[in-house]
Image (cartoon, rainbow, N blue to C red; front, side, top):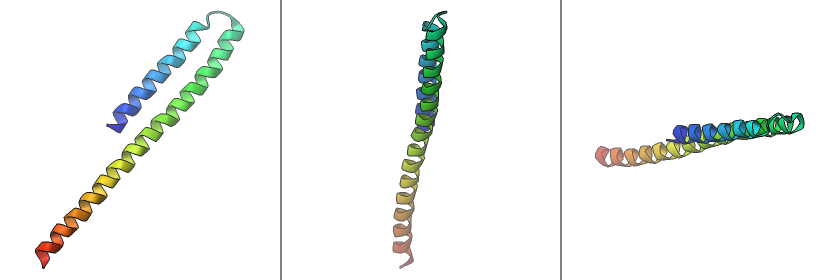
Length: 80
């Protein structure tokens, strides 16, 4: 699920970056400024996507850890 959200976020932001450059038109200075801004937006998008995946992995690991603890408790009851 985190990967899906990450991909959606990245796709949307990359589309915004492309639109920004496209809207700059043929004016050289506007286009260069838009390209710099788009590059920054893409870089931030990549970072945000990585953060979303890392957070999802962290939550998944917490669920697995909790499940393992519960399984250990159940095993301990049956071993007594």
